Length: 73
Image (cartoon, rainbow, N blue to C red; front, side, top):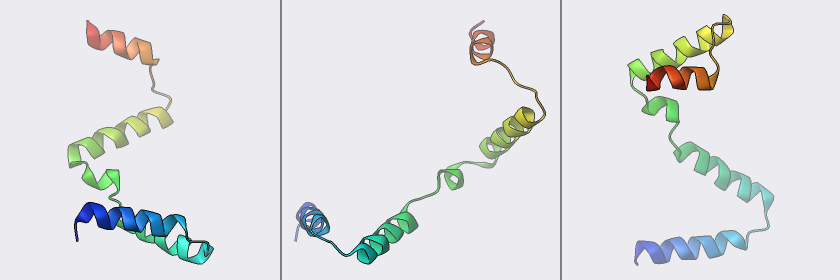
């Protein structure tokens, strides 16, 4: 059976489900199969984000437009 046909059949089946516990199980399965965006980052990107959070927590921050204009110069 073609994959696109299987998907359509699953969608049709899913729209007819009334059992909330089954919907919750399907939602949990969906969540398990989705990748966490953080895991897709390399170490340098993670360190940059963590440094930015530390700066914000320490009160070191810039207005968005100020930061943008300094990059455009």
